[in-house]
Image (cartoon, rainbow, N blue to C red):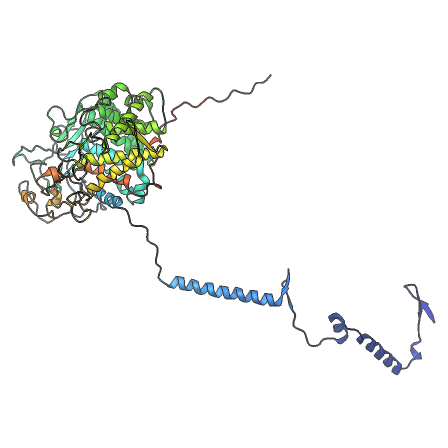
Length: 620
């Protein structure tokens, strides 16, 4: 029987009943032997043999990839081992005490800077802040101005700073001190911050400027008088007329009346106070309300200085004995420059750089004291300030002629500081005699050290390697070495091996001419004459006035540590301000913390007008 094969061939169909069951079984066995005569793959075996003993797989299916079981086991093992080791190491790091790498110790100039700023805390008058950190000082002279019988309009004159070892508040040198501190902050704020003293020095400046705003009607646009001094220093007065020089008393114990000295014709003082407020306004430029208040006060003082000409120390004023002003023209150049930097108003620059004003200030003639920067003569400082303007902004006409002269004069002054020139003598120990052997030399030395370092930093910032002294070229390093040598002398590198900065080193003056430091802090209130025994005492001061720079040695490097000899042992805030400025300029890393080129110009507009926009495109 044939059937149809669907693949095209014949298909013979056997009758199922034609074979017996034994035949079927025999045929199947034959087929099985035929199948087993060739090897079978795993799939075929599973079909034929059914479930049996499973063989261990050589691969692992991870879903996205198939990997070798051996590699998979090793990988997982390594991951677990690495995790265990990492956890163990982390546990050790967290439990073992840490040894942090300490920052490098501060350099000597930074250490001295931190101490020098403390002197201002010891000189504060009024109600002291809790963080003043001078244990032997307290609130003092809280009635300044209130009991004055001179007819002064301003009755609140509490605060400010005492000038030196007495309790007089001389505003002329105090204003210069605040200007110097502000200048140093503007130029070297990064160094102050690195030393951890930026907030401290700004607080010192604000203590001074807050007080100055009390000494005149700072809310007015026009004034007719300002306060020049609080206290009296008449050394000829007897016990019946107690004052701040005839009495040896703590400021906290003062019970006598302190007169207020006003002036209505004092261009030098008013211009210097304007400089102090104007420079401080740049320091506090981030505090817009306070900065604006300072600028307004400075403008009011400047107008008063220009309108009512005269010297504050003329006419037998008490200040003439201690801080006599030689002229006011240099304050006009100095104050005008600071007013320009604080406001950007070019009328101030026009005045400060006017040839006639420069001539009156002595810019075109020499003399033995030419180039000596001090509380009395600011010409050299003003010339450096305006040289800065020429180096970085190049204002051009009509300022260039005078600015070039100032630049040349600054170069000459810097040459006079060098030992190759004979403008100033030096002691055998190397201290430059800027005041030609007269007493109290250090206040002039520190100012020169500051200007020399600053000018060298100006040249470095202007990519200028040095400057010419006649035909000879000197690198900026020469100026820095001069400053370092002078400051090192003050800090102890001198024939006597004495530090003239109290509290720095181990050998420094112990009998500082200072009333508060010389009287022990006890419950005894010493009278005007009762405290004199402490002035005459041969013992060291019971209170160490940390950071005070004394007046200094004589021209033979000699020094007498005697309390009554103020020419050797008395400190002043004007002298300390110059020291602080010089120390911060020399401190820290010169390569990473340079001068701040731009902050001083923050209010200065572009020197040239903005070019007009291009014309509109032409249309046919």
